[in-house]
Length: 557
Image (cartoon, rainbow, N blue to C red):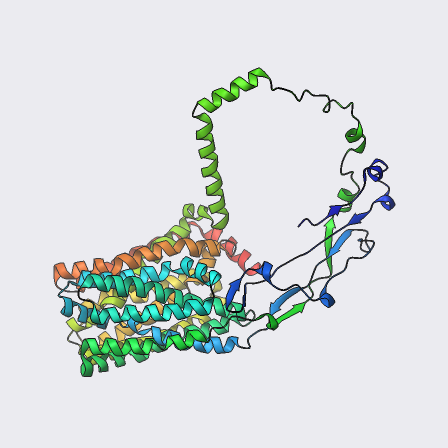
């Protein structure tokens, strides 16, 4: 809808004078909608279908449509928003429980990996593909989840994913071969788990604005709690019920997320509250308002040269040129080029592709992110096998995973406070690289140590360092590319992270199958991490002025 509509008859236009403000009759019809997605009867609907603002809140224009300074102004309509919290806290508790229940099959997959190798007689590399495919589809499920939530509702998607995830977990117990495990657990379970996690983020975003960070942190802390609880639980179930019975019981536990998903009700219309924004804003500059919109005399002169042009048949020369262009391929090629240019421009408007030419982003967001994801995915999928080679029992492995989950949760919380210290802000990138060195050195030292106590300490240090840098990677990305390019940088870094997750477990498993130990895989991961850290530090040195400028702009905002 246009902001301004000029209503005037031809007779009034003929008497129009740009310096005569009293003879203008301006009628402005304004409707401003800035409304979030909301739920209506269990369905996600667009803002256009929201109820109109009540009459008592409607803004009315002054007759003069000018403020005290003589500027042409217009008043905005009120904007509705949802009440903060309310049922949203029930949703936060529900999402917390869901994260606790869903954390098991992912965070303790290293225990399942050993059983898969024994049950199906497969190599470590083949077992690594189960985890890789699961995690890649977990990360790629976002677009599908957004479409389904828009077409149906967050609650419907959560209920459907609860059922499909349970079926995927059951495939671990009853699949006749490893390919059915790939199809059931990796593909179906990965998509369902990823969409279920994203549904929680969407629901929290609908209910919270000022307290969104706290609500998100409380909800997602359930993942670390789940890792602490599931590790000893899996060990107990494997001991007393065997592999198949343990998976069957775990799938029954996970099915309880169906109840949690039923609580994810989106906000209702009755929860809307209307608040008035600033009363008015300048609509047209005064200098522009005093200029004539059209040349009235020229438009009413029927002898004007533009009105006397021949409007009959086109010039024969032009017709021949057009025919020649249609017969050739030049017009088609130009059309294709223009379409490709428009497509690239549209993509570039959504995500800043120029970041791929930024050396700092390619060093931190591409190289380091992919190598770190590769190392962490290999660690998560093969931890039980690595410590088993060091003569650890199954109960000791479960204890290690449980302690790692608790310390990882503490490291994430502590990292948020440490990295925000005012005195550390100018050197946050160097601090992050120093924290990256901790898990890197642990990867290089663990193959050289046989003492169980030292191995326990080193593995816990690895987990704490990885949790710290993983939780604060988005904060460091702001220091690398700036606030305005932050969203694009995170989006572009996801494919590189996905590539690392996809290749980490299979490549590490392949090296283990060839060398018959995990030492080579650990040395390779540690060496690659050292190279990536060195490259980032060199890029920081060569781009110091640019990074200082970005930091000043960030804190200025």
